[in-house]
Length: 362
Ligand code: GAL
Image (cartoon, rainbow, N blue to C red; front, side, top):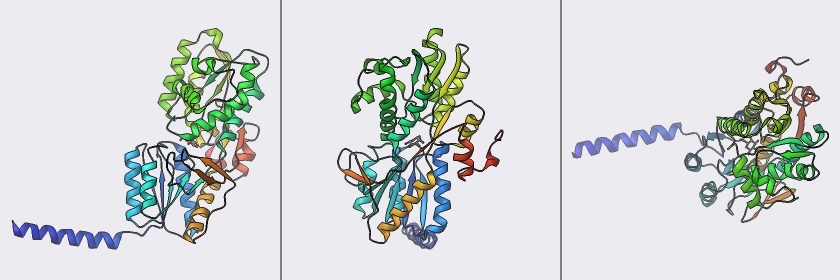
């Protein structure tokens, strides 16, 4: 018995010496929500490019849509000695506990792309202007519509993501006056119809609408919801339709379902993220537009903020976002609406994606 305990101790000692000598020190820990959406693979790739020149050591971990896994990732990075945590939460409120833990361990916490809610432990928020994303989507639909009575189908992101509310709020800012004047008629949300005369919605009201139109940022959920909506709708609710789709992944699923419906003559659909498959869809006329959020900018802003903190400074802020507890300093970046008319200039000529990724570009 004693002998076996001794052996276990020897093994534990050897293991800890070996793992210590292999453990890489990490100055900046990065936690991203999932590898299952091309959007976050983009961020990983852009971080890897940027890290080569950033001058600090970093490690990127993925949470795979699980708040528990996210917390383990944060703890692992704290254990490795990270001084800065850059984290894009899977669930905005659940991530507060991870932010608190990192903060208590002395790290600076940078909320990346999505804001962590209900905690004082967020130092800085690196973001795009998400209201502007929704406004660009709404404006695109408005610009393409003529006459009155145009069928409008609304879809949104996951209610656990604060951005979903901002995107919807931005779209509503632009669409609501055009619903009120009869240009559009909402076809797939009784809650949105109940609230269609209100120019500004409360978060709770948006939450009620989101409850009916959420895709959960998930391709299959988006497809099933769209098919259910199209089954409920009659031929008179179809024809030339307008679709607010929240991001590219869900837009491809939603657009495909509309394309497959025999009573849909034409559709205009939105998106965001400029994912490679959606840029191809735009070239092929299967998705109408996307919103380019240049991830290179976001990664650079996050990197710059990390370096500032490592050097004892404070990153530049032009704006604050309230997270339910505090006003978090931020510097929101611009976004660009992209459709077939400017896809070459905005996506290829800007160096965002290489022309070799696509077919049918002239
Ligand atoms: C949002 C993000 C979008 C989109 C979406 C789905 O928070 O801002 O760019 O990718 O999540 O993951």
